[in-house]
Image (cartoon, helix red, strand yellow):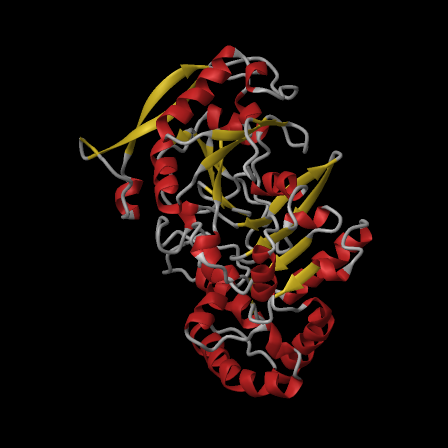
Length: 430
């Protein structure tokens, strides 16, 4: 199979951007199929960090076709700003290298306003949303009242569709949230202009992929967030609004399940989470602070401090099951250097009993007590390791135990932020 899907195996922020960047060098196409600019991929090239929110990480390689599928919700201003920034830095020299599906739903200004207002309302559940309008945009999509990229290009059509939608959202904003109403003409003019500027990037991504698969091209599908944030399989309601599991690639990109080959899960050597929600292995001590500091654990999109904890094998095995992961990439192993001991969560205890499965109820998960297996840590610098045998003995034992517990191979291990700081045990495309 020539299709490789990259999926976050935790709560997002696992380092997918680096892995996609590495694998993009041998890909013909790189495809983003869900989420919006609530996601952020940090890629370090020759010591220079790049922060990408919508455009696939493959754009940092010349002559790679980068596609944004219809499963994404797109903020056109953010997308255009990203395009401009990439061009200033010498990337995206050929506009045909980026294609956006005309069916991609648009994040409108009322989506962002509602998102923030909901999160700030005193009696609401605090989800920890980024405030980027992702949830409300997906909500409109499901309610069949969304605006799509193709709508922006025809001003009269756009206005006709927007009138009843904006009327309803303005009522909600003004009467329920006591916020100012949005002006119809201003929104139409601004977003039609975005549509005109995006027009040259719009094309039938599903058809392009179908032809690429027929020609056996190498296609890399880049997921956003992680399995535990999936709208159906995650720690609901503390989740994102799209399907982050590997199955989401079929709906979000328009390919057949028969065409999906390898599914590579990305996991840190520890666990992080941004925002609220249950986190059984969270460390609220000096070790958690140390991991946060050494791992530079701040959200790419929001800048928020990430909560840190030990690697959760229970959650990882769940992610492997629901997303059909065939192998793993283990990220930021170097961050654990210097700890006297490292721990793996091998089970949950709830009300005195060991749970046999990952709980679907977030309130149950919140009250679970992690059961740990403790290993000796290591003091050696890992940044120069390029083979598994280059790692210290204790580090190798840690990696092997994870592999043994999750029962799938660890094909890639990251030992630093740069492209070349990687141990490649097996090429996922092969």
